[in-house]
Length: 429
Length: 167
Figure 1 (spheres, rainbow over the protein chains, first blue to last red):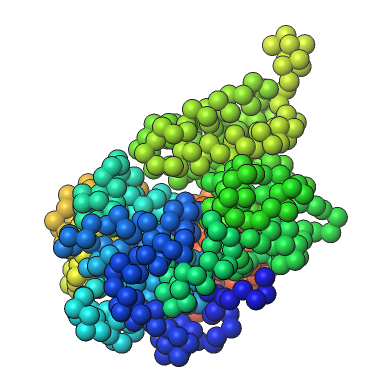
Figure 2: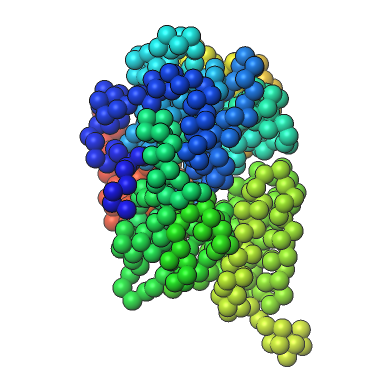
């Protein structure tokens, strides 16, 4: 673990890495210069070979996404997803605060690879300070000749701007993000056409949408090569990942580790174990509110935190936002918290999501208030299962997860709140 | 003075970023909110006029996003995160105590007009719970002792301003 190079969080060790001079002194913009030598196809092939996967949560291969962009379109865009709104996720903000030029450089390499005409960095509105700082850093990059007309005599021109959202989780969904950038309601679009196709992207032009952490890996990959990158992690989960740990651990925070680190190593060796003496770990949401909850058994703790190993545990590593709960926590309360989040954040466009999140919230509240009956548990399970796969975006699926999997793994936590069928029958109900 | 004159440079900067003017509706709504303290009919009308949009469309954008306020707020708008990760570290109690100390209901404003408190969803600072967003800035690793000291400091500042104005 200790001999893994730091790719994303070098700002911990290098003072003032935010400033372009310091960044350049530490190898900054070398990746971009090298990319200009390699040409578009060379860059895309290198990123493909590195098997870099989308760090926003979906894990889609980044190089493959870039290769979908048609070459012959005159206007193309890159939209950087800095909307970081998944419950329990706080890594992109750290990257932008400590190492903004690495993101700018990564976005530039992506823009060059697809020959984009402009890059828009979409930040959640709460990142007001971060966005204004980023504007300064973009100005530094322009001053240094990395943005504008005919960049470094390559014959290619590109601009970069920030855009602030205003408080809507759904704008982290790629098509809702594009709608929001265009000045419309942040609601998902019908696909196809996909963002990479003509008609599906920003202003209907082909567009790559990539997460902050994804793009921040790119300069390192171009400088050091795909083979070096693949030495870190596993075949299917290459490189390092930023793990956000919150909840009931001694040392919460963001940690950069290779994917093949185990949950046990992270939660005990790095985070110092349970927060309070005398408690033990009970459950974990490994990918914020949207991934299936798992009990923290030995089997889970000993699993590597890769895409493939977490799939075997019937969950996802996703955005790697680990919310940890000790044995003092009532999982029904967890379900109620998470469903409240999704009820609030549902954009209202699709009926299964708008109505489903509303009713799940109502019934879970009823159960929590001690007014539920055993069949209410089956009811919410049923409602949740009827929300899946029926909507324009994945929010409804995410909202169904906390209900379905909390009931599956922790039925007793629900049963303690409700009257059983026997009790009700005895009472003549 | 109208927004388009008072904030001409900033508005122009935002309009220059996008190939289609409508994209500037969000940054312009922020400017309107800064000027009027909330999204009022006047601000909506001005933004609509600058962007050649229907005021109803502008109003619907403002209504969709939680960071545009459709009613006046206190000088300090305190948005406390009570989402799961923060709640595991006492955010619900903190939110309740804060409202109690200021004598306000949810989304209410203190009598002196200084503080508005409401709870919000995840603000991406889960390792620093309890935390809140005050206007556009984060306050992290909070407890009620820290909050009380901060509130009284702001009240004293405000009182000093009033005294100075009355001299």
